Structure formats: C-alpha cells, structure tokens
Image (cartoon, rainbow, N blue to C red; front, side, top):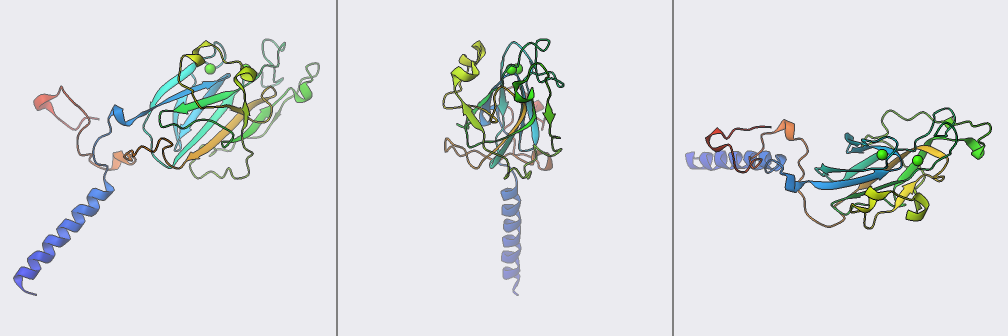
Length: 240
Ligand SMILES: [Ca+2]
Ligand SMILES: [Ca+2]
C-alpha cells in the first residue's frame, strides 16, 4: 500500500467508527417538548408502567376520584402495563364497611394519540363478592406474576379488555376537565365484581404518526447537549 492509500484507509476507518458511534447515540438531551402528556383516571386507583418502568401511581387510592396527568418520554414500541384497583375489602370484595359492592373502571390517553380500548389485554386477579352474595361475601385471588409489567411478559393468553360506556362507569368531575377524547373506559369482564385487573398493550408506533427520537439508554452515553436553554452562561456543564 502506498502512503496515500494508508492515509485514505485510516481516514475512512475513523469516519466509519464515528458514524457507528453516532448512530448508537441519541442526538441530544431530551427536552420537555419531547415528552407527551399521560392523562389517567381510575375508579379507584392504578399503577402505570411504561417499557417496564414505574411511571405513575394514583395519588388517591379511594375517593375523591382523581385524574393523574404526568409527562412521559415515549419510546417505541411502547409497552404499557397498568394495575387497575377498584377499592374493596380484600376479604369481602366490598367497601364502606361491607355495605356496598362498588365498581371499577379505567381510562388513559397519551399525547401521541394512544387511548384505552378493547384492543388492550385485561385479566382479573382478584374478584368478589363471588356471585354478588353480600350475605356471605367471599373473594378469589390469582397471584399476580412478578414480571407482569415487563416488556417481554407473555400476555398472549390474556383476554381482551371490555369497553364500558361513560354512563356505566359514571366518572366524576376531574375526568371532564382533561383530554380523554377517543379513549374508552375499560375493565375486565365484570366492572362490579372484578377488583384487581391488570391491563397491557404494545403501541408499535406513535398513533399520531409523529417522528420522535428514541432517548433510551441515556445513562450509557454522553448526550450532545441541548438539555438547557438560557441560564448557565459560562457555567455550562453537563448537568443531569
Ligand atoms: Ca384515584
Ligand atoms: Ca370503585
């Protein structure tokens, strides 16, 4: 090889390495504009996992019925896993000192257009009072699998969620003050007796068709800046 060929080869190798490294790195730090809003309402409470991470826990477990609205940094395919909990005494399945059976209901909308509907999977893990027998109330439970919220959890044998109308669930005031347009109330088959329900779905790509960068793995790379605007001045550092 001539000296010139060697230089060209070296330059090409350096360029390839840089290109490969760049391809594996996120382009920049994510900004709040990269997030989408998650609006979540559960009768009575929920735990929300996205891509295996705990994202939100309902701040009010019983009443009043509330909406939880949080910022989410999306990454696709996006696995959403939710535990929906209808308030119930674990021994009787009833509430208000065993005077009421009560009912559940869950609805979610993300800023990318993701909504709850019957395409989601839903499986009951605690239900009662069996047969609506309030004189001799009993519950049944299935152990919740440890990895139910994991991305690779196999929910293929779970039934699909059942949709319920707004009238059936009867959401309270905060629901109407948030954007749930296009979303359906879901639960497992029995909105009254099923008290602990797990939901899962995979959003393959953003329903609104918007192209969004994937910021996963940020702790393993040095992002290309862009995290802060204004402030800092000469004190610009890679703050997290
Ligand atoms: Ca709640
Ligand atoms: Ca309830």
